[in-house]
Length: 280
Image (cartoon, rainbow, N blue to C red):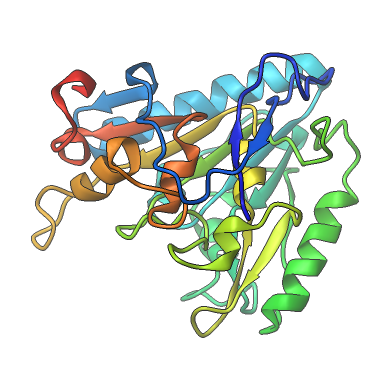
């Protein structure tokens, strides 16, 4: 059974100050609401994007000052657009990995997060070490290969926790309307995995790979961004954010709730509109 990654007072501390974690069996227990101090509300999607970029810059500066390198994990979706046209001076001192990715060719312009990232911003990240998949349709083999690539990185580029998990300096995460994070969907066994760094998810065609929830939670800083509205969703992701941040949810019912103890939530007004008054 999966157990939530919670902070403990002393357990798991390492020299690189990776997040200390203690594993407790809470897979079907309602998660406590997120602390109000972890909620950051911005006016609109543009402001959310600027706030996220500012957090990335600060995290990069801190990591590089401490050990000379910055390890960042990113999802697909709107977060890619937040990084559009960025040209960080520290790119040649960075390693970039994907929180999740479909098992497709890396140059698939429609389905590959890597292809989209390359078009939007990676061409400007000169010297960045990007960990890519092999580009096959075999999600199981791709997950194994991606984990091996991460494990091959030396600890000065990707530190480890005391328990042996990778410790990214920053983990950017998006949340789906059903509460999925990465490719970890409600009601599925992948949400409960504790051992693997990278998991195959064969829920859809094509399949995909995803970092496990403990790996997401072990990052020094976890940032969840939600913003944007449409004619169909005039209040954006307000329902999902209410459930993710304060709803009576478990890891199984709404996986994003598992990141409540560790994530900073950066929301626009629309996404935050259904949160309780203490959050706004």
